[in-house]
Image (tube, rainbow, N blue to C red):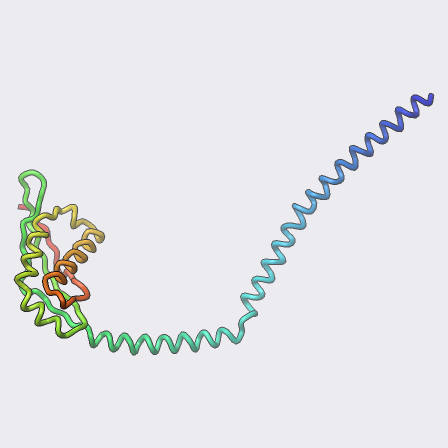
Length: 186
């Protein structure tokens, strides 16, 4: 009979060992599924409280700083608005551009320049023949696809700016404005 009692004790110990093995994972699961979300919620509440209530005096300082920056920006913009000069090429540029097959599209382009240095205008007037020469060679090689969309027009502005500044160097313009772009098929 002792052997039966030993078997019962061993079975009970095995169940206890299994029960202890089960209780440890249960504690880990409990910590993961309850403790971790609780910590996240607490941190979120603390962050929210700091965001809402933490910088009461800082908001007033930020508003004052924004007001000062806005006044300085308005003053700077007023000065810049008075300092911007423009020069427009009176006649539109009419150029036959590269097309597909027998089609030779015609590009009609009106251009004006913006600059801040008033000494640039005489340089533009004196260098207008060089500018137009630079433009003609470049524009003839364009295709309608090169001019398609806002990206094509942006690249065109940049290239015309570069060519204009090369033609009137050392004077420099700041911006090329495309006041009219028209492509017609012949």
